[in-house]
Length: 404
Image (cartoon, rainbow, N blue to C red; front, side, top):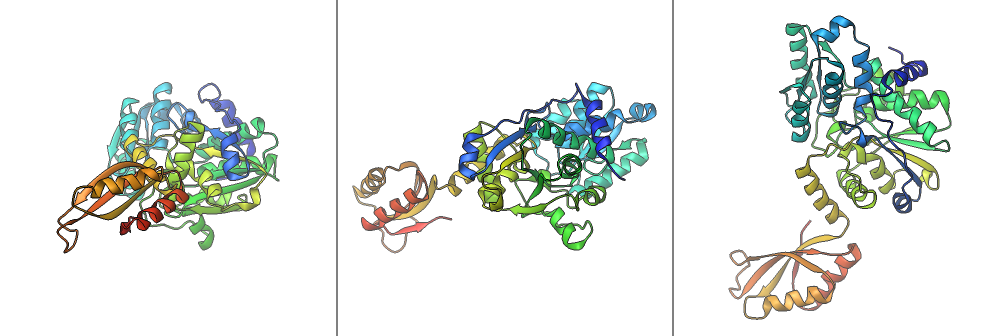
């Protein structure tokens, strides 16, 4: 079904007062590290932590009185479920959500706290959708698709209207792509109002729904692979979203998991902003050098959500530090006689590195009973510092095995 600029403007009026008009400030530190003039659309600051509230509220308001009374249901990995749960509670509409078993725990618990009935079932989105369809048939609920319903797409497009008003000189908008509803709504609004503004989609290499659809000429199933950007992994782009966006999106790029982890770390450190993996992919694309043509241009990054599980965030930070050269691990062979470990730690200290952890391995240290493997985790400044430390250790007679 077609979605027009008029639909998006109507959605903006409809959700006004119920959805936060998120800020879009300039980021000097991110501009410096990417060579572009960055602004960040902070939709991670929405009440439930993502842009999904826009479409959810618009779709709920558009229901008939009978549909509102019976309630709604959706299959969602989290953010759409959260948006429905929150605005369903505000509007007095019962909400049921079916979440796949990989859904982040924080999103499951938050949906329950917001009053939704949560059913965790399915190894992927397709299986969760089948369970939701069964409940539609048995309970008379109305299904609200998280990324392909016209009212959802129109609601998501309101984000673009805000960017164009907040940043009149924007040259390009970088948008995460999962099911395609967000980039469909954004591209409709942008190309109708400012056709010269580039709309660029970013996927994880482990998702790639939109790119696969472009290659095939139609939406196709993409096998699920583990990714930090779990919000970009519905297995298939929506057919409506794809039809609306395919000729309006200027470019689609993908980024590896290590760049997503590093982008999460950069946003946390430099912008004091917590984002989930799917929200970090626009910055990751710039950091990975995927868009050199944007150097010097005004670029809006859509920080689409901030609902990352705290335990996952801790692991992501650690991986980001490793990728950044600020955490390294190696195994050094030292003598097990007095002074052996002291010599090792002295070389590390003289290099200006800080030991985080040392584990002794005597059982698997080889034939020499007077040798021990010291597995060292060390904090460093950058990759050059890591290389200098390794050279110093080898120069002082410590055989090394480098981890990773």
